[in-house]
Image (cartoon, rainbow, N blue to C red; front, side, top):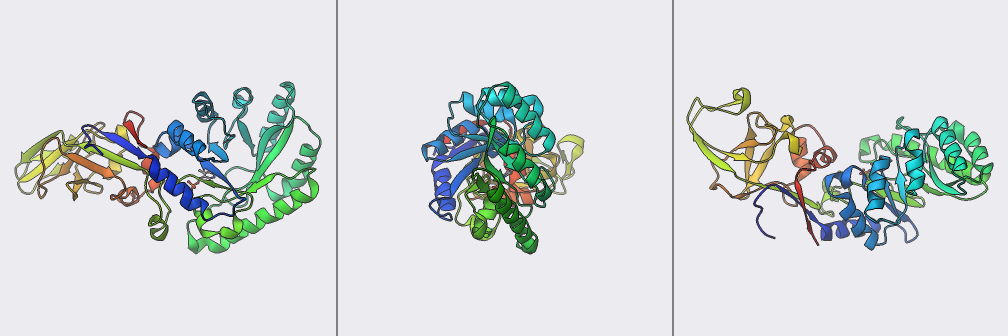
Length: 368
Ligand SMILES: *Cc1c(COP(=O)(O)O)cnc(C)c1O
């Protein structure tokens, strides 16, 4: 691929296909696959990712908010789209764009039922979310009877699926807790199968759930981070390819003397003669101030260059004293051989936060 001449996020659709096939190889033939494409497909490019997965016969998409689903519909996505976190104010737009809401509380359930009825809908697809321990969104196990009775007594909505979400599927030290969640979800499923007049799909696992709890795949799994190339463990990372490479260039090189300072508030003070490079990427692009002060680093000609001083809004300065480099040279912030997980760790965060933060002002380049 050509060398970067400005800051770009390259997105490799072959890597996406590889990750999809690897995750799919963990499933039974009949288990459906939902791709989580919220937050611009984790900072990548939701329309491009969704179109690519649609061509690979993905079964379902999920987004967090309604406007993310509307954007996918406007881009021509026809596959069903689950909206994980709708609010009452979104219901007419949801129906207009044929999006499928997660109903997670009585208030939201009743409000959507009433909106669907007023709209003369029959069998409008909805998804019922249960809380099995994350304590974020969802009905509780003791709500089953009330929900089932409401579902059995309406033709306006149809529970296409019943789902829950694991709190610590990547953390094997919390295995006992996760098994408790799986068991609670099994009890909910059993009770619903007994009482509901029809059979919905059941789903529980996110990426690490798919990889660590094969017994809990049920009818469908939901993967986000795995599709984008991260397995939340060294072992699984070997099988996955990060789809995004964040590249930039050296705008300028300065040589500074002992006692000189670099950047706002003189965040770096030099104790010797040094060579520093200025790069066109900053906290407004998603490289937060936590990466400054020597914590984070980038790669220039395969060598690590630490980010020195304070991260500016549109620039960072890196120490290149020991690196043979020139103005205009390509810089890798993260990518297939420069793990975003490792960079995220230097700022005490996780790959999810680093990649979803990459700002929309950075040009996306799609590699097909
Ligand atoms: C974001 C999200 C996922 C995807 O999780 P990954 O760890 O990225 O695979 C799945 N389910 C729900 C409910 C989510 O909010």
